Length: 353
Image 1 (cartoon, rainbow, N blue to C red):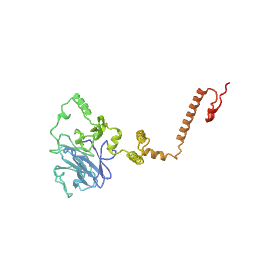
Image 2: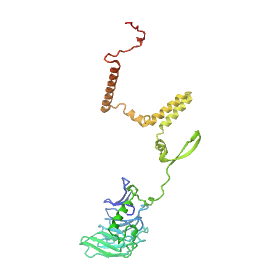
Image 3: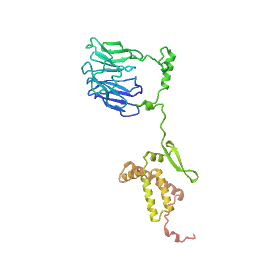
Image 4: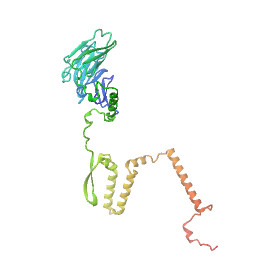
């Protein structure tokens, strides 16, 4: 329909609405007690109403704004429980084809909430002769015309439905009846340039072109020249730690531990420069990602785990370290063996030879 949302009817009686930016259905409705045979959306109301028909022999009209239930529901006039086809016109005329006839309904009778399942008044009906040999397979309204095309097993048939089509054709929207080859090429290019991104397809199409909501703001109390000044900074320009804190995803365990340790140091009289240096060192480790609670937990879990790959890498590093030490010793002492020095060598007499 108008908002490019995909409407699907399923064998379990459900109707689902799909958008490109969601991995699951945006809306899922149990429409019928049997398989859904046809789904159509009203273009005259901007996609507000949807009509469905099922093999349980019922036709339902839904309000796509709240999905609180069917606005109007009635059984097929043919009385059977076979396949039925539904189709909306540009002016809101609903065509229902089943059992050898096509029935047309108009607003507001089919869009007014009704408690009982009585049939709405007919606007027009058209029986097809010998329909037992050519059942109805599809219904389509011709755009900008009062013509309904009926598809059946033996071909197609056309009937006139007064007031079904929109007579006011807007040529500025690329619907010029007298355009040539150049106009058609330009229309195709213009249509491709006017397309929006797939992630902008949503149930509510009113947000396209509207004013974006204000971004999240935080208060920075650190002002210039040591003064305390409140300054609002956009959320996108905040550091990562501040963004996590504003969104409620920050790890506050380190701050709790640091505050508790500082209070303990003050009580014991040890809250001097060393405590400040320890806090700075803790902040440095925290920035590196080594002192977080999740890192500590994972290190504790890996403490008694013997990984062959890790053992091989550790042995390789030890071997490389030993080779580097051997090269340094060779450069320093040459071919002579390295003499081990002990603490009593300082009292050793130096010979005059």
